[in-house]
Image (cartoon, rainbow, N blue to C red):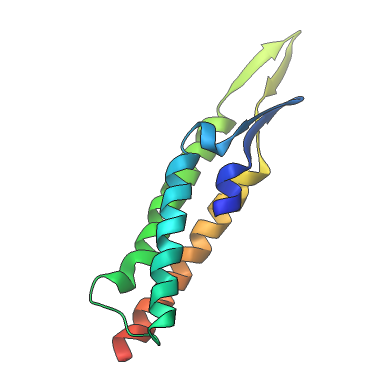
Length: 118
């Protein structure tokens, strides 16, 4: 998710807009915080406090909502030039953030279930 936040989110011909220019700074920050939280649970041997076991799942949902909204926004940008409709393409970084967010959500749910048993 961190790499996708820094990568291109929108492309048009030879021009790109990176995620950090828009909402990518939010997904970058949330990704870093969730990585720290999940790593701290790992280093404690799977012992999580009451609230920090849900950080991964919550971060995944928030970033997934941000990425889906951004994908819909990019795909809605079209114009007509010489009777042809052209539009902005979704960049690979935005797709990576969406997939990573869904993966983080599933991983966060797994961590939350596993740490409840400990």
